[in-house]
Amino acid sequence: MKAMLCKALGLPETLVYEELPDLRPGPGQVVIDVHACGVNFPDYLIIQGKYQTKPKLP
Image (tube, rainbow, N blue to C red; front, side):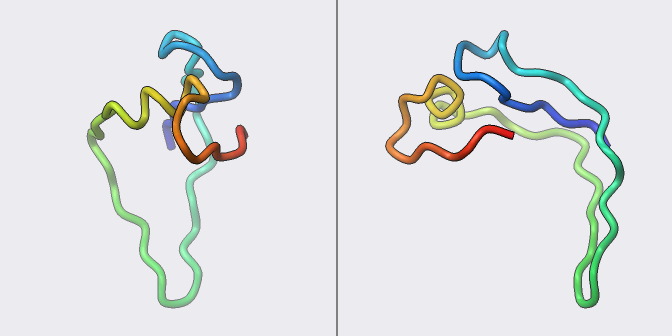
C-alpha cells in the first residue's frame, strides 16, 4: 500500500512517500481501497507540530 508519512515536523515538502506492506484484516474487520484523500488545514498544522494535539511520529 502507498502512504505519505510525516517522519519529521515541517512543511508539506517534508512528507515521505513510502510503499508499505498491505494490511491483513483481523476477525470482523475489512480492508478498503482508497483511491484519493484530502489534506486539510488541521493536517497542515499537525505536520508542523502546531495543532492542539500532537500525535507521535512514525
